[in-house]
Length: 185
Length: 386
Image (tube, rainbow over all chains, first blue to last red; front, side):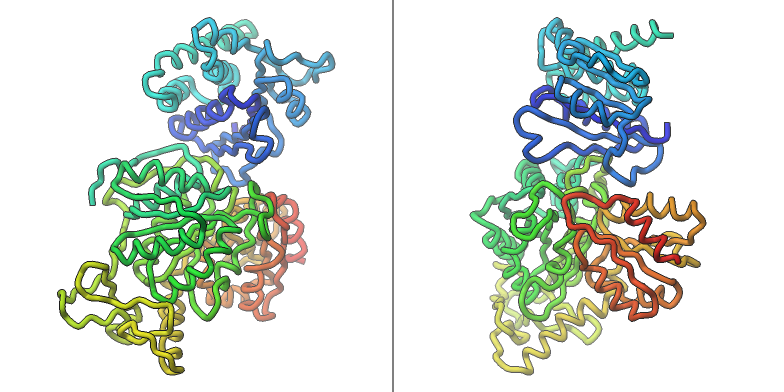
């Protein structure tokens, strides 16, 4: 991997920015890579829509914005509609399968992997950890950050006292991703 | 100073927060500010962090108040910072001049957004570079630094404090929205591992005759300071003043003071200078850039090199005082300079002035609201190489 350009998007309140921060932190602090994240500011960042751009690279990141995303993490329908057309033709789409309905004409070159992250979070007992479930799934499916790094990044990024809950959520996401990749192999 | 509450080691944080951590690492324990996008996160962080390290943040009624309050804190002995963006920077110009005139060491941070006026609050620009240099009335010098990453925001904030103490001058940290909001790995130094320039305090005892604006000799044009409560009863004024700090309403005093305020910076330009160079020796074209644009230019330079062009990269970390000798020297050796910046022509004027017709200067303007498309910079390089 030379440079991976990632777009993460969803509703405000889904923890989109924290998800990006955890992936970036895992790469930049624990995997020894370079990571640059930019979150959307301005009217589009208030209320419903929320998005972040994340670049993970072996080399220092120069141009800081995503030019052609190879990875899209879509946590709601709007994120899918807005950003899927910008995804590279051989890109990877990771989506919240209960909140995103893929278009019937979804481009076949794109690998699409869904996870019911919100439902899994509800099973764990706290809907709020859906983003952490999603992060685990994203890490396991894409391999962009090591699982060890993402575990450490989660533990460092969540409010004190919630580490166990969040790490449990992360493992559920990772398991879901592992099953999927094992099935594909 | 107590090191309790200091945060160290690798973090994943934005440039605004890194600037705040740089201020803390530099020993700054006072800030007054009036939050404004895209600089708000700096004061937010200071407001949260200062109580942990024994500092004080005051949210003032406006930027005029913020920029004068820090100067009161400095004369009471603190290291102090204020933080703003375009519209607030305009309001601070009066007091920037006061800090220059009274030789009050302090740091002003401007996280540049597109202007003029309220412009594009959430989007980047580099349109305040000439305002940084000339925004207040009268003749004076300042120092301005341009970071290009969150780590550099931290490092340059520390350097800004050090230079302000060394030269007793306001130092301007000219960030932009992109480096301010960009999140990357930032390593906060352990206490005692980064060089901190102490205040130039007078050694004179209480009651001794202390002249707050007397310089020791011709080589060191920076007077020693005191602080409130030491018994030196200094007089600090924005009026033209003599060595005692008393108003001196005559042309001789004006000339002596103006020349010293100028020379204490310009004669030490090589010491203040920080330019980063890559492959300028033997280059036909040198791209002169600063802030976020110095990163955005690199893909363009790499593409041009891959096409066989000899292209150098010169990043101005110190924008003011402008590194005239560096550009003069290069102008005799290169065909052309390419100057991309997110404004319609500011630092390019300095490059052109120093090139003095010996090398072409091609500007790559951008009206603001985004960074350059590297292809625009590439086209200018190709034109310059022809």
